[in-house]
Image 1 (tube, rainbow, N blue to C red):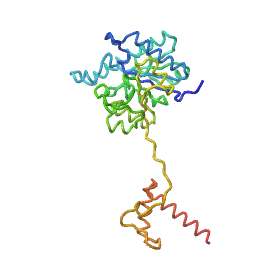
Image 2: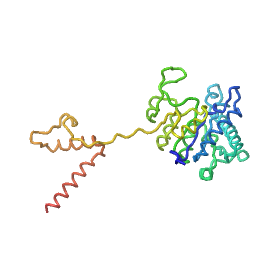
Image 3: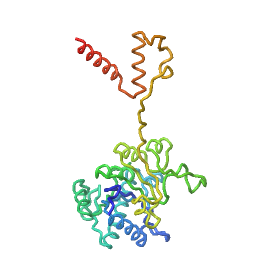
Image 4: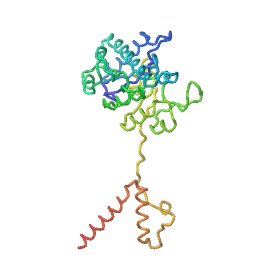
Length: 305
């Protein structure tokens, strides 16, 4: 079997993914299909942990806008994620997949408390781990919770399963000409306010170099296809740093008041200005080139002696 590109992944599912066409908050048939997708991925050798949102049951931010105190509304939303986590656990265990639910809000009668090292041990034993209740504090979304758990669990990537097949430069449901990105940088997502995840989640993934793969979980077989590199998705990742190229420095690279005379000589002030400009062009720390030149001159003196 070909080794997977990513070994350990965190799958972030929106709560709406569990809803059926009949308006049920948690549709058993839909949940069973999602569980089948997860089982297929696990069978291919991936270590899987999951975060499920709670929007199909309760949205804290929306409730706060309607008058419920924000912290209280967020705690209610966290409880909704626990309900979804238990539903997914039930669906997975019905098809023979060992699963553990860990909650950021301790509720020992229902599930395990979140303990990072215990969660790692579950993954090493081939179990699926579902993280519930976000980060356990109000004012944080489940996207932030997913990014945090992905960093804590040393995941190779964060896969976000939604109802669209990637990241677009506009809402594809409203703009017919919206263009889907194959890849996009964290900085572009933040600067253009692209609706991928909230800013804190994007920043956390960026700081820990965790790529975010956005795909359509509603399409049957798409999770396995995207994991194999065949499905349609958008990858949010770091920009590639430009490769430094060796080239001759010309007058156009230098400040306007610095020039090379006919004999190629410069005054001391000009030399210092050229060194500073060269450091900037080569991306060197201030003073680094001066130190190298001083060391080189010292070696030459020693050789002459």
